[in-house]
Image 1 (cartoon, rainbow, N blue to C red):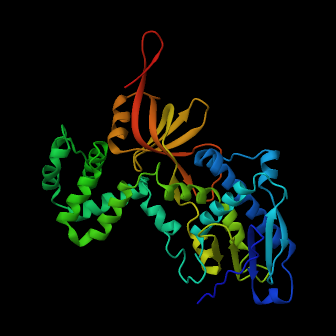
Image 2 (cartoon, rainbow, N blue to C red):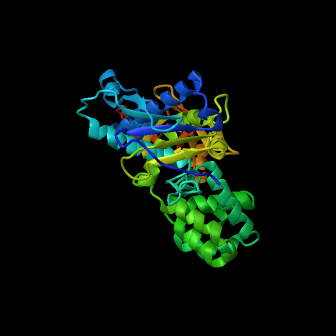
Image 3 (cartoon, one colour):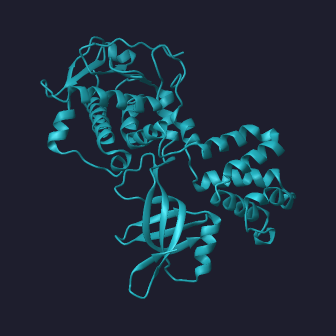
Length: 387
């Protein structure tokens, strides 16, 4: 069992402690220490961007100017324990001291999503939702999530699709059973897409819960996915900050089990709540395992031309006017509408959520989960008209 403690110098805004038997008699190698300290400062900088400009600027790689960097910079002080380093503001008479305190609280709360929680806890993030579990409850309609839901519905109602359709027909308006094309799996995907398009996802899940109660745990998880609003959820915003600092947290965790003899790392602060976090070899492996997992950003609109369609994944490539290429995750109805147009490069306006992957830092959106899609036509006077 991991032993946790949280002693800290109350005059410090932040403390980091490197723990391991070798560190009782020798110091930390310069490279290991410098990498960890740089990562700590970068996390604070990103927390400032998060607080000032929100999540989208943060995830697009906004860089602080000289004045801003100085205002949020930390300097080292001596810690009270072996392997411990304290931090205070670099500008000692800092008019932004209260802001810096708030940033540290926000930063450690986000960092804590990756590690062990409060002092005395032996479970990661005791009393809080863990990052990986939290991702499952964000409103994500990535291909993987859609595929998982589709497969479960297809499995549970195999040979009974017609009955399923007619039970749900009051929610499907002008859709008829003959409109469902392809094999069983394709028909299920089209049925789910039609329900989503009309805002009846929850009714579909309630129907599945009532008629296939043996899978209620699974249905409940999908219910939570659709119920969560990613634009307003504070938990979701915190996950976006966590996505932005993923590389820095991973850098800190890489010091564990490396040449410096570090076995655990504590990060703590006397300010705010949930400002204690512990990393060990388990967290190091867990963080590695979620690299490339995804979380959605806030609602945005993109405009451009569809250049390629991918039938097996129900996705398309959009080229924006800037030349940036974005992979669109579509529902089956929108995908088929694009195919039916017969245009070489149909121009569209899409609304939805950018997709951000842990460990990938980019200033451009590369993946986008589409909620609505409209085609753009040029009318006689040259103006654009969406429909």
